[in-house]
Structures are given as structure tokens and as C-alpha cells.
Length: 590
Ligand SMILES: [Zn+2]
Image 1 (cartoon, rainbow, N blue to C red):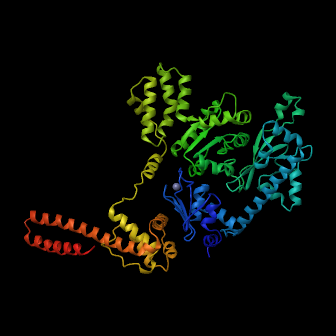
Image 2: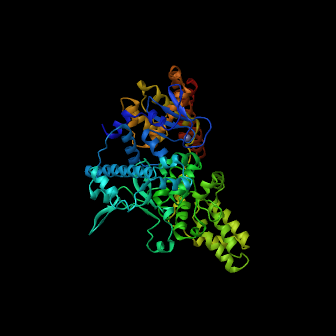
Image 3: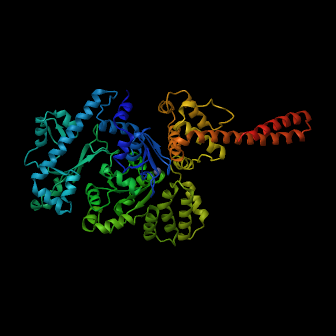
């Protein structure tokens, strides 16, 4: 058995989906409110018998893996890893040593997180500092906040503890927990710091963010401190587990809420994220670097359409921030900015006034309006210089919008505000060329045409659905004249070669086709009961034959007219014979 088969044998689709959604019995299937599109009544179905799911509202569907990929916003490899872990199956990877090292580093980081948590519990002054800033005990637990002891206790407190647990100094260095100096050897990277464990999407600790702890009692000589003051925040460096360009802080705790809200709030600090969660906006994550990366945005793109960014006013114009915004706009996100009262960061606001924080999140303004308002405030739109500055500050953003209608909206808006002709703004916009042509790609994906629903197409689908669902014993010979749709023919072909429907679908390499087959089965189950299946099948076959004959008769009528026009008497008589015998046949079929 392959790992995928092993996992499927231990974790059914009902198990997996049921751990995320409330499933309600619906005949032989289960149904739920779809997590992938917004709806009130349940159109999301799971079949225990076939181990698949399908949503009639948004067309999503597939197996356990597809579900985890979509709901967690992960790729197949990650879904495999998550499900393997749940099923208690060890995955063989290409390089077992590498895997062992990863597992080992994971347990080491877990050990460190637990160690720092315990230290926090025994340093009541640090805990008091946190609660003083508004962090509840519940949040301290949930985010597993910890404390790394100060130098006065020692430079190797965690090192010594970890060595006693059987870890090697090299492993501590590799996990980013220890630093090695030529003379003094290994010592703790984190000392006298409030520890924020950084987790991956699976809640595994992969690294730490660490904030210096200023003991309020020792604040007596601030000038002297300036010189030697260590960085306020330090992070785990790049390690085999921690890649800051791929991680979003609190993502594991936010992902469900992000999907539900169809929006992700992005803040800059660990405290901002924690306080935002505490204030009831659980769809918040923090970036630990300055700019949002492509990988982080890709992760979010699977979960939501909207991102609301919070940055302080001075940072908004900075290159890194602008790059994040450009990237997000190009990926088709609806990008918004949080307008915080001046001088406040999200953590302050959320701690002092949770309701106001929530309304700030609710009232996030469109990013282009945000920059325009700033530009209008800063430049005089009556002067040429002012006009240029306003255009320069927002046009690069407008150029990145994937939809033409949005571009037109902003061009019109800017032109009227600064009092120039729209085509002048359009011309300037043309000079702003965003990288690549991602907009076009997105457009073509969005405009995927729905299947054409003609009468014959519906009949073809119904017949195939009946065969897939009930009529496996008598799969008819494929009639090229009867079935014309390519996808239907391919599924027929798969059915005829297989022992049962599971095998048939397992042999279909195209996921889209398998999803389509599943949809047909769910549809058939709802529309036709087993008792009526045979009669329905027979009547659909007759109906399809009649439809095809009608088409053929229409074609013949057309051909006869052409032959008459051409004066080809022989051809006319030949076609007329064919027409009369076919219409005779048509009359006998009912
Ligand atoms: Zn749906």
C-alpha cells in the first residue's frame, strides 16, 4: 500500500471533514454548510461509501487530501504530512537521515518552548509585566509565551538543561537556540527575553521571536543603557525548520478564522497579533520580517480574497511595504489599510479598547483610497508639481490591479480630483508596467466557462451518472454517435475497463474528471432512487437517441437543400431516402 492508500484506509473522508465541519445525515450521505463559499443552506456533501466530498454551490470536491489542502491552504505534500501524522503513519521520505534530523529538531524546539514556558511561570515579575500590558493568562497559555532567564542566572541555562535531555550542542546551534564562540564555546542565544514560540501551520514550534525584558525596577540609568542596549527583538536565524519568508506568526491559530472571514489582518509584531486575537479578531497574523513575501501571500491566497494591513504612517511609504502591497495587488487580493489613531499600534489599541480595534478592522479602507487621501493631504492638487506627485504616489498601485474596471474607476477618480483629462492619466498608467502579466493569467482563470448545458449534454450526464451510481452491471458499448462530449466519453471508457466504480475512478488520471464523476454520482443519488434507476436509465437512453436523430434529421434537411441548390439530383434523392428511413425510425422510438 502506498502512504496515500494507507492514510485513506485509516482516515475516511467523513472522519477528516467531520473534524472541521458539523456534518448532518442526509440519506446515505452527509451534508454540511460549505466552508469554501458563503452559503446559508448546506450544499456540501460527503459520501461515506465512496469516500469523497463535493459542493454543488462552488463545485469544489475530491478526497481527504483535497479537502485538507483547501481548508488548510497547504500543498499536497503538506496535506500528506498532516494526515499521515493524524493517522499515525510514518512517511518515508527520500532521505531518512534528513527526516530524522527534522523530527529531532522539532522535538528539541518543543522542549525549548516548554522550558521557557516553565521559566515564565517561575518569574512572576515577567508574567506581571505581560498582564500589565493587557495579555490575559489565557493568551499566555494559548500562545505559549515563555521567558529565557537572564545572564545573572547564567549564559547556558537552557544549554545545560537540553544536554541533560540528551541533545547535542551542535543540534542546539542548528535549531538556532545556541550560539558558538571560538573561546567560550556554546551558550544560549536567548537570555533575559520574553519568548514567543513561532509555529508552522501544524502548530509545531519552528523558532522563536524574543523581546528583551526590561525589568521596570532596574530602569535607573537610561542614558548609559542606550550604548550597550541589545536589540529589542531578536529572532531565530534561518534554520532547517525556520524560514522567516515562509512563516506567518499565529497562522496556525488564525487559519480557520481567515477562511471564515475571507480576510486576513496583517500586523507587524507578535504582541499585535496576540492582542488582536484576544480582542476577538482571530483572523490576524504577524509578519516577522518587514515585507510580505510571495510565499506568505500564496499561503493566504488559498484561504482568502482580502487582506487588511496595518503599518504605521511613516512605514507606509517605505519600499518594503510598497513591495508587499504591489505583490498582493498583483495576486488579485483586495488590499486594505487599517487606519489606526495616530501614535497607536494594534497591540495598544486592542488592549485598551477592543471594540474600537474591531471597528478599525471592520472599517479598513481600500489601499488606493488610503494612499490617495495621504497624497491629497500632502500635495497641492492645483499646482503641476502637486498633480505629478499625487499621480506618482498611486499610479504604480493602480497599474497592478488585475481588473480593468478597477483601473478605470481610479483613473477617473484621480483625473477629476486633480483636474486633468482622463486620457492623460491613462497614458501615464500605460507607462507603469507591472512585472509579468499575472493579471491576464488571473483573468483567464476566473473566466473559465461553465459546461454548456444543452438538452443532450444533460442526458449524457444523467446516463453516465446512473451508470456510475447504480448500473454497473450493464455498461453499454460506447456509441460514438450517441455520446459526443469528450469528458463523458473518457469516463465511459474508464468504467468499461474496471472491476468497479472505485477502480474506474482510480484509473482516471485527471483530477478534474474525477471531481466531475463524483458530482454526477451525488446528483444522481439525490435525483434518482435505486428502485427507479433502471427505468430512468432506459428513458434517458431513448430520449438521447431521439435527440441525436433530431439532430441528424436537421442535418439531412440542410444537406438536401444544399444539394438542390447545386442541382445535384442524384445526391438529393440519396439524401431524401436516408431522411425518410430515419424519420420512420424516429417515429417508432418512444
Ligand atoms: Zn462550496
